[in-house]
Image (cartoon, helix red, strand yellow):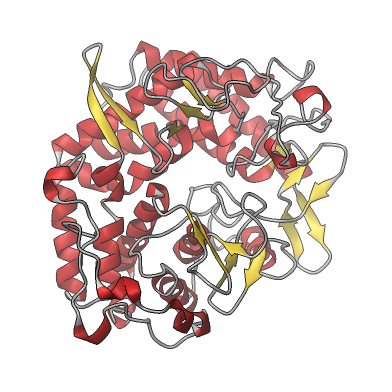
Length: 481
């Protein structure tokens, strides 16, 4: 929508799309009867933040694909969505401060806020204002971790929370307090990526170093070597995966060097608390933290990060790699240290599918390829195949609901051009005429979707297109219809 105009495209009967499968030979065009694609971005005066480098990149993609390309239209809508709609930036205590809503929920997740700006990092070298914005995200994440390293989502200020009655140590700055390992990994990922791209060390002051020490302290507590640690969580709810049992500590673990997580990146409770994708992510990001700390001259922080990284990585090798009945040696999704293992994957990142995208493992590694074969098969209970698409979901919404995030990640991690093309076609065929990616959609009817405004999925789609344009332009051009 632009200027309040609703296009005829939005009135197309969606039943026709139900017949489009992932293996379709062409993209379904949403421009009916020759009608041009109309931008769904806010009017320029209503955009929260404007980056010259991002606008230049949008124009570049549009020129490459053509104005009549649905993928170009989706890219124009999706790639700037975080900047257009979720930014609240300024200065705090003399430093840039950037709060990013996740979209239709007015809170900032440590995970989402990193993922929302990650695709913009390469553009910061050409846009100082964009670099300052991302430095502000790092500063805000530092502040959040120092408020509470166990919280996953934060308010802008002291607004309070709809979850104020949760049985945990809630504070007015918190939106939600679900302990998720990846919540502390993503800020390291953003800091390291920012540092490697810009060379700027200004965000990495004493407060940031204190926050990183808090990260290591929290990870150590949740290795549970000396008991369950200080965190517990209970919620009065009819949804079992929205709370933790056994007094708020979750199912028991046998200490082995792995880090226990109360919840998954989906915000769903773990069954076995040693969540393997998140432990692998932690080992990788702790290694990056060690590299940064060494360069910054903080030898103690560098040593502690490297030591913990090695310990977690070794524990994963000992406890998570296991023989599957049909797929050979693969990574389990969750384990408990007692020998129990859960075989599944979830759409949210980090997932087993996403490990190469997150820099955890090479996509050609045979362990990953075996795991990928399992994840993208009916042996994964959350891999859904329907009339409209196939892809991964999870228990967060319901059965048969596919997440575009997982389709994008499948494309980003694929070594096969045909599979990559099918992912892009699937995304273009299942946005239900909205011009945006959703949280999830039904495998047989994408008109049944959740969350019209989900900035992370939108920006990640943009990253997918840019990766193809850089690495496989001929594939992208062949799909420009």
